[in-house]
Length: 238
Ligand SMILES: [Zn+2]
Ligand SMILES: [Zn+2]
Image (cartoon, rainbow, N blue to C red; front, side):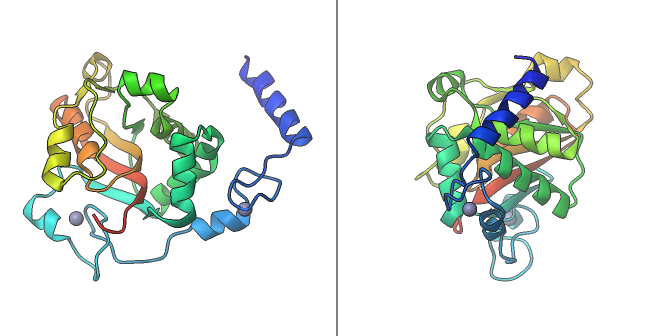
């Protein structure tokens, strides 16, 4: 459908059937202003490199011993409460419309952390998983975030060349092993004008950063200049 017709149709549909807030069920928007405000993170100390939660300001032990190759990893908030409910619904219950407000939160986080990048891309799903789910939740989030920020969005620069086990429940070493070599840059990246650019990789949730790091390694191998990671949520312990 033409984008203009599509926009008119969705505006009309919103008028006839106004969306309900996913969290409090009040009618008006996908997530209402009150619930959005409640999603805002508390100011807590985080590792300046990987953003894991710390008790004081500074760098976590993991980053001292085995720093990520990423320029840095940033997270919007902790993976719990209503934010966790929203991410779960976006990922597993087909609530794709949640990508809009959640992607805007990512864009706000990007601005508040003063990130400077040229291209936004999502952590890709393997084609088998993409066919099962029908969409990549990280791609939906990244597209909204890029649009809000006015940055180029690409979802064709890296591929997940083999399926991986879910990272949940794996140790740090197992997580790293699980995703090592799972991603590869595409010929579009290696032959395009992307090689010297600053890249932002977006995912919904991360625990240790191994998945984003594995994506980054594929892009570094192909000549990327610098790579940041940005996620919506990170578990309190990780
Ligand atoms: Zn609400
Ligand atoms: Zn760290």
